[in-house]
Length: 217
Image (cartoon, rainbow, N blue to C red; front, side, top):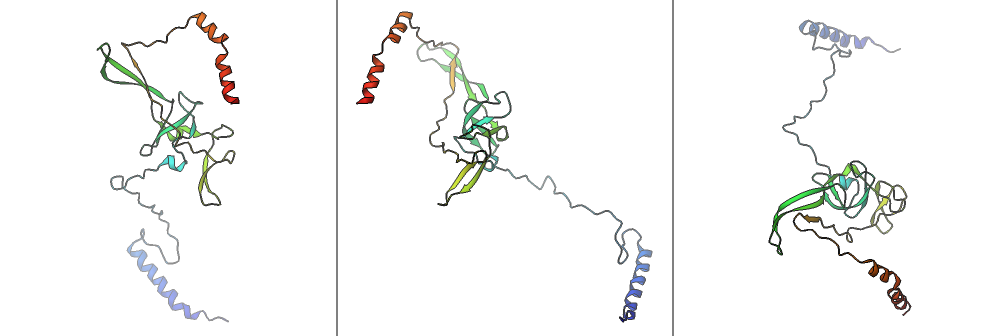
């Protein structure tokens, strides 16, 4: 049989400690072998003056690159598709060709022919937030997400999650579109074509025959 009498001195000291401590402070003291009734103190939050937020490059997290074909999800151009021309990681915004177009008024210019001073109005695409666009699958032409996988040769390839095919690399072939400018004082109109000239062009098949001969040669 186990002899528990050797633990009696320890228990007497614990009881004596509890009596003396409770008489000194009843609120901030927890008796021995008892759980505290005081609420737990949460971790102190950092001060906004001393702490700074971390800027996350969302375009890099979404595996977006210049030249990707994307679709606008929200806004006045929702449902339309375009190509990424520029990525601004500090603001998490991108410029898509032909999307979110606004009119930009530049300074006055002088017409070299008529020497007239006029205002130039340019239609330029405004930035769009990264969360408002989605890359398109190259096969299914539907919005998808992009993941990264390593091939057997060790090359990192971007893969579409929708169809599993590799995303095309179009950054070297994409050329940003030039903004269209319109001058108020100078009006440019196409040269009209008469009906007789148009009919003669439709009846003439010599240009088509020259292309056929060039293909067979």
